Length: 49
Image (cartoon, rainbow, N blue to C red; front, side, top):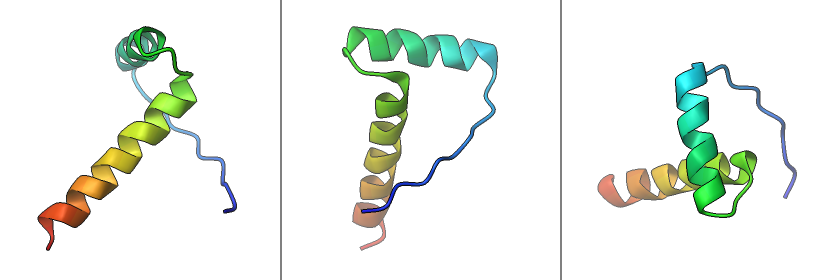
């Protein structure tokens, strides 16, 4: 699988919250965001059936 780089602009407060969650889950911020996006896509697929 090829991977693309995506840049996201978010508010500082949201980034701080995501950083804290990533730290709690022993993840990198990037890994956390990818996981969140994958879960979102899975939920959409389930709800559209």
